Image 1: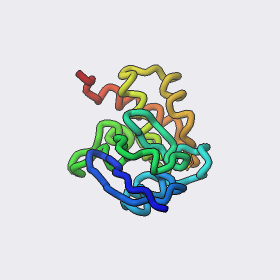
Image 2 (image 1 turned 30 degrees about the vertical axis):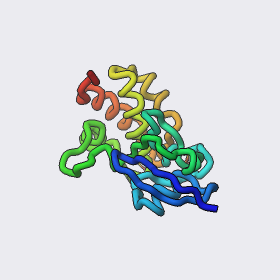
Image 3 (image 1 turned 60 degrees about the horizontal axis):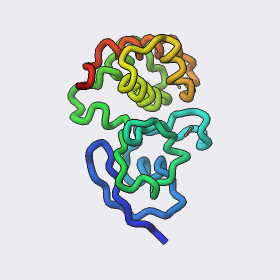
Image 4 (image 1 turned 90 degrees about the vertical axis):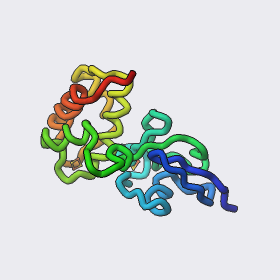
Amino acid sequence: MKHEITLHVNGDEYPIAVDPWRTLNEVLREDLNLTGTKFGCGSGDCGACTVLVEGRSVNSCLTLAVEMDGREITTVEGLAPSGERLHPIQEAFVERGAIQCGFCTPGMELSALHLLEKNPKPTEAEIRSAISGNLCRCTGYNKIVEAVADAAGRMKPKK
Ligand code: FES
Ligand code: FES
């Protein structure tokens, strides 16, 4: 039997009926057409599916959609909602050459956002730790670490 839930994604509300076994990743990608969130391993190993739930990074492939009823979810589409201006993290990734195929990028950027919102001036070790759950199969880790450090300087501190 389907469950009636309301997902709050990037500030928008999505009332939806979902089967109880469907993951947040499936519902975001297939029902809401928010395909910026990727699907890689499906087992919590690659981080390609990372989204923020109330500011905390989670693997959407391991999260049931029904558990997300009423929770605030941020996906990569929410980083630059108007589409006119990239988020400072995205600007830094582009300018630092931290994107190759781009498959890991949405998850990396959300892990970076999670880090920078709680730690605006992270050390290199803290950045590496924060993205340790995100695999880049193009292995561009040094550029990604540089981009996150650069993004830290571009983001306005939260009041
Ligand atoms: S697809 Fe979720 S961790 Fe790999
Ligand atoms: S840029 Fe290709 S997987 Fe990271």
